[in-house]
Length: 443
Image (tube, rainbow, N blue to C red; front, side):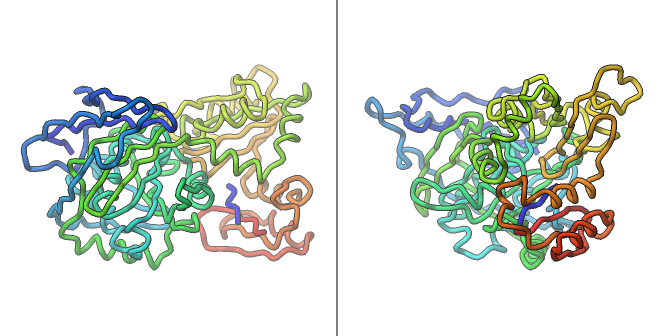
């Protein structure tokens, strides 16, 4: 199925991951800049600040640092429950300042680990990434240290903590480690289309091994655990990993090896997209002098894919891209793809009051975590209900993934009936579901 649509008294060391197939750096890790906006670690130790240990050194040319060279211990931290940590289908969303309270994020993460079957934690592989909003980089480090302490075998992190929500689903289902392991789930750090920044919104949700959101049976357990939690596990002496550098950093703990694998955010997702869509036909369309388009990333995570997908793979001009540099505060904007907040795209498509140039034929925008979109034509707006109906009507002929046919379609209750008409004409199963948003095509 495809969905359309605290202050810390200690200063941790930062370890750069070893690049794959490259010699591991032998430099001492640098300390975080004292003026960095991301010094809001909520897991402050009451003990004196430890002296940062030097980065493990390779012993011979071409060697890499081994897990045995970087050893961590596990600490049990006492805590008390916070009220209101109930995750919905969109996870737990609060203001950044709420998440920065001592132990707040840690309580939720430990409650999640405790709600999962043991084999989905001990020795497992999990993904930790999101839309890159403010506090994400701190959260990745906290979750990695807690994952290590809870016996997780490895954590996969998109470079700079960037992975769209659909990409996380693809990574869970498609990515395979060198030893044949697949991810059992993911912590997705996003508040979707809500604003980002020091006083704005942050969110966290857990997706299961099928790539989809945790079902109510799991979220109910998580919530129940948050109301009774008294302690959590964390590897406090595990150095921060430089998640801006692609590579693997290895450690050893009480339960064995633990890796943090930072990988390119776009590669796996683009590979999957090539199995779904006809890239060659799209490339020919973008090369046509009769066609032009514009994509607005709204400074969300979609920007991590836009240049690679549209420019490098499909040959579009880079001038076709708007606001495609991901920013922690979404450039001060609201990453909600609608006629109000995607104003620059709306103007370029000829729908603004000040539009005075010939608009492109096609325009689109994505929200903060790139799981919602807006589609525009030259001087007109396409409602989401109509866009999914158009896709359903043309899916079998135009999208290779659906070449064998559709089994059914679904839409959320408050949306228009355009999809109903297509389903009736194509003799497809049709479902109306009680969701706040979302439209589906089933193969």
